[in-house]
Image 1: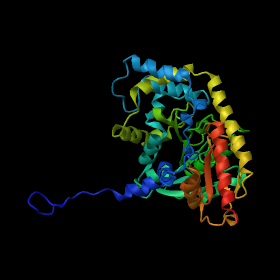
Image 2: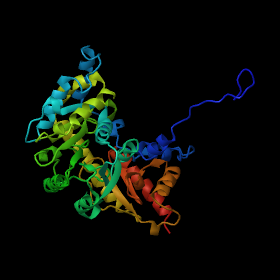
Image 3: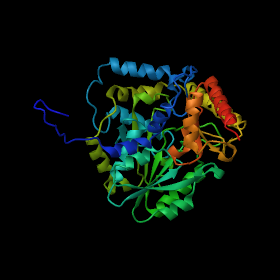
Image 4: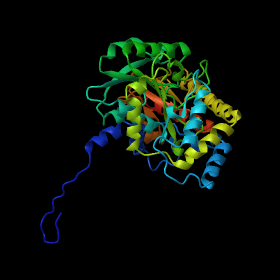
Length: 419
């Protein structure tokens, strides 16, 4: 570039290349890449079966009581101010009361730290645990945002397997083998993303006992809390805080179908005061002082959202998800190159396995999804994005006709590429 005098101007700044790598392993990053492969001449509706956001579909619209709560909070003019860094007291009190309904011990507002959705809670948790040499254990398959955040911290990631033949339970023997004196925490996601599993009380107790033996805390990602429709009910990991300290991460995004409202929480389930004594609670407060806060009027709506949303709304949502899971599980059986290890019992996803041996020109799961996007005008998530090569993650949290059409397109694609 030349300046006005004809000389070449040198600029001292450039983009941060490390962000591209971190972005590329997130769900959004992978799906955005897939969307670039869509055929612009294909006039069929674009089907998005890769992302867990059913809020676009009328059958998944949120409760009118939740909408009214937001309107009332906004019009009250009491919540146009800055939030305190931990969240406004009425909202923290409401979250504490809401979560305590399913815990043996009662949470205090001081145990609650409000965040910009559950992804922000992940950032807080990993950042305060980050010290030179420290490592954290995360599930494979899992939610790739943990890897993306850790890429910009001092935390080393170590993966333990989930066992498809056991309903995606944690391989606890592998956890013990991976941990060392520098291991600080393990992550569990329950109900499961991407697998749709729901852990039993007995399995969660074993997780707690394993973590205690290793001297590490448990990060319990419970953003899909109570979205269960199988044999196991949702059990909060905080039930076992008398065994091991727990950081619970959650939000209203999934249960109320409002991911764009961006309010979540990080909760210290600290029965013996271990997190307080270790300085971790102070580190959380320090991190929030240099972080962003959730929108104040959404916080202001939380007490009314929790109090007024009726059980019929939750029952309806779970029924739609159950029907979607059943339909997806049964229809996948008709596709020759795909098998489903276990029927989903919670969350909004199912993991299915690719049999590449019956396909003629598909190299791996990423190639499958790229060509599927181009040929069928739709997106599903390659398993490599969540740590499972040659698997696929499909969301069933869409309208029934959309799901049916999506499975039919996948079937047509597979038959077209069968040897």
